[in-house]
Amino acid sequence: MKTSYLTTKSICIPKSNLPKVVVIGAGFAGINFIKKLKEKPVQIILIDQHNYHQFQPLLYQVAISGLEPDSIVSPIRKLFKSCKNMIYRMAKVDFIDTENNKIHTNIGSVNYDYLVIATGSSTNFYGSKNIEKYSIGLKNINDAINIRSWMLQNLEKAVNGCNMVEKDALTKFVVVGGGPAGVEMAGALAEFKKYLLKNDYPEIERSSMKIYLIQFDNRILPAMSEKASNHALKVLQKLGIEVLLNTKVTDYDGKTVKTSTIDKDLTINANSLIWTAGVKGNSIKGINENAIVAGNRIKVNEFNQIDNLKNVFAIGDVASMVSTENPKGHPMVAQVAIQQGHTLAENIVSKIKTNHFKNPFKYNDKGSMATIGKKDAVADLNSTFLDGKIGWMLWSLIHLISITGFKNKITVSFNWMLKYFSYEKANQLIIRKYKREN
Image 1 (cartoon, rainbow, N blue to C red):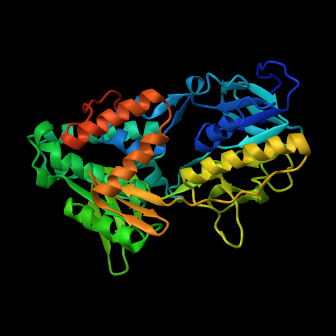
Image 2 (cartoon, one colour):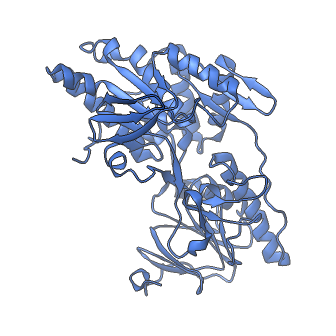
């Protein structure tokens, strides 16, 4: 153990004779695990470096000024104000001491009887230092705010500039990754171009704003059906987006996107690159290296238990439940995180009462969805496929139900109603300027 991680100071926690369950992370997995333990005979201690839970599926709407940031975040203390057996501390976890059942944070240490790691995932740049340095991912609320500021700052510079080469680069937007996040981000940019660019930036010709969606695979939305992929591709192309399939981004220096295909190498002069091409688990120091598998995820068994650790568990994106049926583990999506949170809560209660786990985790795949611009979405629901307005209405309804907080539901539904009947969005404000590294 590295002594630099050891802390002699303890986090101030009320004394209790109940089993102490420490949860690291307030994402979908963590909050759903805690909700299931409300009023159960345990003391829950939630540790997160932020004091809010964010609804990640709508980050792209914040990035495009479709929603304000506070519409998709919920304060942790408000979220659990009626959960009397939960204590929250804002802290960053540095190290887990599994031998002594203790975690060390930047504000002190805390002991646990059961530890649940629900730290989620972050953007995976696959080792490219330049792409990591000069692009922005889309994994948290800060990313979304930075993208919004970056986009608007570039458009303001394009209005003021006289150099045509620079103006051209400032009005080009490259989105890398053809999964739901990339498709939704590209579609939202196209909406901005189609409905708002002329009104807000009349000095910029609509034809000069170009949007690229680059996908390494041979189709976008590869995890969905071919029907979904084909429909999404048609809609994106109709919106004027240049979709480059079978294309790999090899480098980006802040000005030039270098790409490679089977036939030739291409370059795109663009000042903005949004990276949605992959994620990796946020594992924590102290977990045995043998338990860390592909994608920086923590290997767990069917009870979300980490190998050789009886009282330490991982759930959500950071957990990899590898089996014959799932050689790569479950997909890193919200539904897996939510269901694992529920199942583990039941199992820990059962373990405390009977010394046995109740049920192994079984993922109930309810399908997948992606929205593509205004009033259009695709949805794969088991044997049913929906697209167009019906798909968009279902997508909107499910996301609205899933958003945490009554106020947020009202705010988002009002914004969507306004968007449905008009082309108005939230104000294009640069509240916090974004400065890229040089």
